[in-house]
Amino acid sequence: MFEPTVYKERRARLKQLLRGGVILLQGNNDVPMNYPANPYTFRQDSTFLYFTGVNTTGFALIMDLDTGEDSLYGYDLEVDDIIWMGELPGLKEWARVAGIQHTWPYNQLSTDLQSIQHSNRKIHFLNPYRSDLKIELSGMLGIDIDDLEQRASAELIKGIVALRSIKEDREIAEMEAALHTTKHIYLRVIKNTLPGVKEQILTGIAEGIAIENGGHLAYPAIISRDGEILHNHHHHHTLKDGDLVLADIGAEGPSGYASDITRTFPVSCCFSERQRAIYQIVLDAEMSCIEMLRPGITYLSVHLHAATIITEGLKELGIMRGDTDAAVKAGAHALFFPHGLGHMIGLDVHDMENLGEDYVGYSDSVQRSSQFGTAYLRLGRELEPGFVLTVEPGIYFIPALIDLWKKENKHSGFINYEMVDQWRSFGGVRIEDNVLITEDGHRVLGPAIPKTIEEIEALKTPPGRIS
Ligand code: GLY
Image (cartoon, rainbow, N blue to C red; front, side):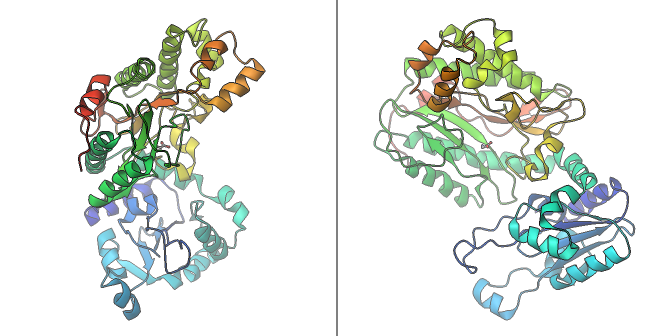
């Protein structure tokens, strides 16, 4: 939580970007896990958190663009709440945190919105991503649920994206604090990656350290020897010598800021020759892409640079062939690198993705590609100072995709399917860091987390768990 003036200033800047009417922002509610009184861990909506600092269930905000006044709607605790949950902050205290003068009971919100509608003033709202808020908004505004997306305010979305895309120094400090926690996670997870250990033990270590540090994981951990499954949330395997583990883990700090780091490491003391070969290509791609980062460059061009290095490396192994530029232009690399190079990160691990990926990641001059692989690139636009993004190239051998392309003889001028078959059980390698775009280049955020082959192997020697 920052000083109340921070939230006040952010709201003032947002109001300057819109032309009239009111802005409605809905905070998140507790979501029942298996019955209403047993909710999932509460996570506030990131836009609501950004503009208010209010980090509890059942609040909403109206910003009046014509009078400049802000009103916070919420609940005060009743004695029953205090008995079960203690003396938590109430409406007035949250209003102080947010720097807001006017407070109203939550059940006044619907009436106030209706009177705003009756006076023919525009209500700028976002399309909710949670069902309870969709139902509530639809009821309050008299708009069919299916029409909310189309009726959401593009002006508001663009204003929020413009502000949240440029990270303040205080936000960068929060992200670096989260990265410190993530480093602790990696040191413990890599040390504990041993033959006979179940992946779920490593997942427990990761979650435990995030919670120990006052936060959570920013997304469900991906820790698996099946590294070719891009978002693998199954952690049931028992690891054995020779396995390669891909871990994609990011702590979220107590203030809600995310980190997102990927490392790939062997279960044995050392990488095998094959693992080493693929790992080095991915590492070269990651480090070379990071070197390119500066204001003005498009992230699409950096993504294609990663594809070029990956294609060159796979050609040296005899897995790909032909002209590298032509292979990348045709999209042949996407058999092995079927995702985008990275995304914005901030309060959300995929920052602001709920507002619409293209609003965040593309611009009038850079449009999303429709080609398989590059189409998944979440961020393609020109980079600006203050952006924080992930750089996460990877190489994967995905048997289902290999079989499909081979059957279609797809890009066979560029792909040596006979050789690919010899690698089909390899798994996957991804390496990822979080990078700030500065005025004249970039800065990799957070403490260094072992990444080179030598650094990772050094962590595993002598073998043994640290508790
Ligand atoms: N680290 C998970 C993701 O970027 O989707």
